[in-house]
Length: 294
Image (tube, rainbow, N blue to C red; front, side):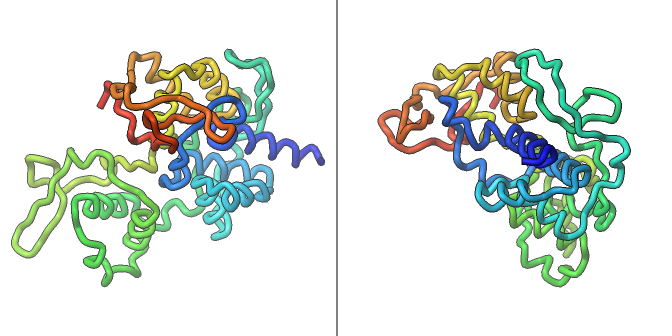
């Protein structure tokens, strides 16, 4: 295999290690990771790799065969002509100074450093195609009960079209408790709770803004609580740039614990170690796991 192919393969294989191959390492995760909304920081990270390498084959493979949400969105954007504008700020580099691993791992880093980018530093050619604040406000309206049908007459507006597209693939507002619907005559709009002030889209937090699916983090914490190796998760977080593992380890270290652990057990099913309900034979969703931080 040519060196560049090996490099890209190693990057993507590492990047999706926890999502796709935990069972072969005696670990497992919830299958509902495939249906969660894509993670914007990770999509930008993948687009940076594709822009820097000029290769898309592996991302196409993971998008189709593994139904990886981030790869699907990255390939969709790539096919629409989206590219990274500020590539001069980044480079692909093998890192060898890990704390929890001695193996080199490939990362997209800030040029001239070993600092892995989060993805939020990436500027895309599609940024600015629609009004970000308006798109987020529409998602807030939808999350607070506004029917999709009310936007039909505005479907040619790019901000509206993007909001509806994201809603369809699972984008939701996380902090709806900050807001409420205000009605004034025939007008209906979203305001900050307890005020009559219309909301600013910059204050709206989407589930796609996170660098990890919450369902993964909860599943990993259940696995750790039931005997899964936390050092394994620390190593995968470092080697594979797997943000769900990093978040799970961070919460564990901060004292967050599973509150309904008695409902679950860790067992081997069809050669894979999974978390199930007690006396059940079906892998749980991570969202069934309660945490002390809830």
